[in-house]
Image (cartoon, rainbow, N blue to C red; front, top):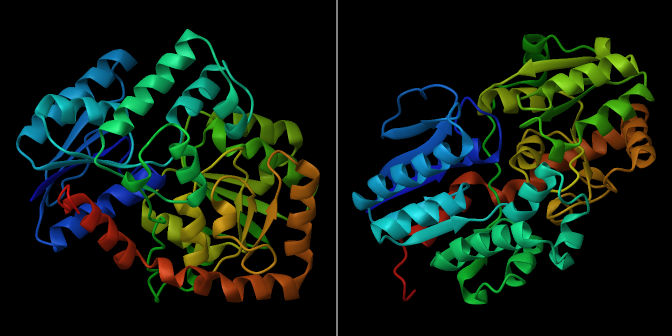
Length: 377
């Protein structure tokens, strides 16, 4: 079988789809299937063992969206399935034009994220589900739901997101919870070697991913300003970087924050191996890959209790949970991990074991089966 994998980001980008899509492509190849990828990128991606078709992000948004749908349709005509881990609407349109089955990995409510980015809605994800909205909001919701209803299978990484998706009218038998995978961390990647390679000294928090408003890293900087013993290493690029660097200067923490730029998945794992704790301050989430990458590296997490995060992070066992946008609670959690050596050691000791059952080969195998399964199964 030949599968078209659609992902909005691709290495060297850092983020969930950029980690998941290449790993899934390799799992499909290992299972004897063919792969072709459609993605967007700032420059031509490095060659792989399969074709990677890309659309430049420099194109105006409308033209870029149409170009992606066209690329998906072209690739789908040569394939048996389309699998979308993001750009779901464009993938659904391309699959429909090619008359090919669609399988979706749903990682967020795209309608909500669009409305948040535009400033048309400022509430929580849960509040958005009850928000009637205007004509534009209703259109975004309608196209989101059309795309998902066209899919023969929808995989969601958390029970939390499944409940949201069922609220949009999706058929329960087509929506399956398949958690995001926890990667294997190379044994030779020791903590001391990782710290030396990154030049990390003293207690350091780490975070990785696209620098967007969703990640609320301004909250991390606010907390850092109140915990002078802590440093922060940030891996990733995105539209918020300049404003975050500016805010770090305003708060007087520029000398304790390092923006490392973009990096590979190996760089993400090396960062989490090196730091003392991972920090995830997202205002909304599903089940982020970086959370699982940090735990797999044996690093405890301090995370906001949003989306599917509490389904993996057990407060006081493998990490600490705080309410979103609560700076005081975030400061208290960071202080606990910085100053309580026993707690930090206990959390770290439980981190890797807590995600063993989410080992990447097992989870990717489940997704491969979901993609290639016949309709009647």
